Length: 216
Image (tube, rainbow, N blue to C red):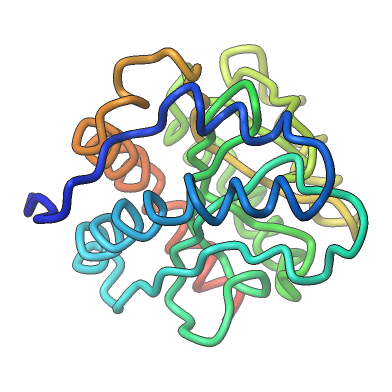
């Protein structure tokens, strides 16, 4: 993997503390100053790393939070998507921060118009779907909430319910991946984090590709 030539570190305690800054303007300034440059460096390298496996160029998108006028964001992220124009309406990969953890997701959020077809494709081959998700991974139904469920705690019927809800409830989402604590050495080392995230995305690549086929 090619290392960046710019001096860039992983995420520090100060980056996570940005989400404790009061007010929209102050918090956005912290995100722009401390976090976005790291997203740019990490995202460019991750896009180059996973594009061959995807079979298409993956484009980097960095959350701008442009619609916010009062409430400051509780998290921020980068997204990797085959669409250059936008990512929310497509299956994509994310890497981002809340104040208490870093998340690495295969993200199918509520804006994806084909999520009913995606859920059906997963449910039709549920045994294979479950087998492709490592037990140490976590799952979420809402990208705006910190909470996630350990994949190890989900049985066959739990997955049926979760995917059924993703299929039938308009605002339901499906995010699968990993959480890392702020003090994890991987989080604090850019290259280790890129390698860890890339491994996660490669592990989830079959599910990403199935989502893209069903979505199309």
